[in-house]
View (cartoon, rainbow, N blue to C red):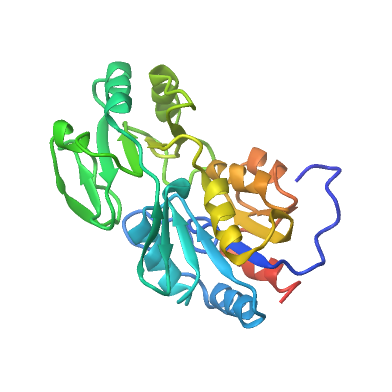
Length: 281
């Protein structure tokens, strides 16, 4: 949080949006993690006050829905895949998707590093992936496909992956993934690129981000950005930090993420979301 940041917001928001990993649940690798009772109860208090709660995550839709269910969110919306997918939690169906043609991106990434492997998200199937893609994390796996099959239809999200020494949830982006993205030079007019912690580069539709995901949900409720509070911990949260009227970074977030927020909460391990929400609800 900047040194000249304003005093913490006192007026209750009209919409609350939460990231998942590192924000309302611990980072996970082999096993999915569950939200604490304090966080579940805090979000219930928000909804009991008539204020909607939205999920805004980089996870695929099926992963977003799993934790939304754990949080007790049985209505509203989950924006997933960095804003490219949206799920109606009451209707139990995809309510919106944007898609990108993966073929050009795959060619550029393969030129940058022939060892790169890929996965793609189609609807609720799970990850379709190339043979060498490491399945070293908990996920829904749809099956193995060839590169030609992977680029045969548009998708809301393409993942390129290289080897990494970073653990999931590390405070810095993976250097190998950063190099891959820089060498591939996928332009913002054609793709939205997010570099992750553990060898991942996410590629989605141009102009689509967590900011557009939460903006779409806010429009549904008729809530302005000024009346929206967002919580996050990672670099992919920065677009929604910039969009929202009030942004809260988790205490364990990287320094530049904390600096971009209006307030820094206690860490995810200290139930930071619950402690901030208690000021309003």
